[in-house]
Length: 188
Image 1 (cartoon, rainbow, N blue to C red):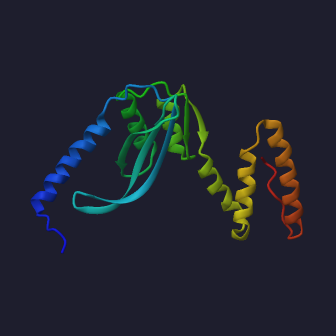
Image 2 (spheres, rainbow, N blue to C red):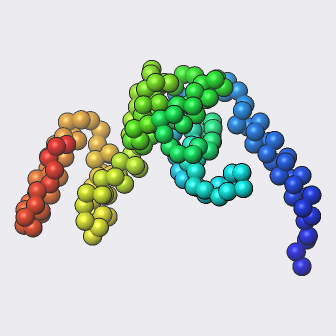
Image 3 (cartoon, rainbow, N blue to C red):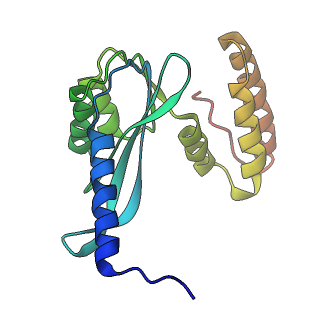
């Protein structure tokens, strides 16, 4: 038989957990985090007794030793420029400093907030998001092959190597698609 927990025991445990989480997410960020990863996901959450889909904004900092640290997690009604700006501004107010490089998806509101709040940082589109978006342009039956080939480009060591291999890949893709009456996009 399972042990019975009274409602008051659960409420007390929840209150202690709420206090600990509040302290964690309001803590001062004392060390520099040169690398910042920003992302959001949607989860169903209860607010004012109503369950609705909400954006969960997440910030991961990476220090000079390569250690990752969750810097912030916050609910927002939606992923927008204003919600991202408020979130990143809050991190800066807590002491976030030394950010040189930010990785995120290509959400326009997020990119605008990064330019506004962290103008000194260089931005890069997240590799995983890029690969997912790229697969939108190929038939499902070639997803695995395309994913493997795109990952292969990320293993290249310099721009000349990437350009050479990309030209070869486009040529091969054009040969494959021309048999079906199409052409690979050469805008890259």
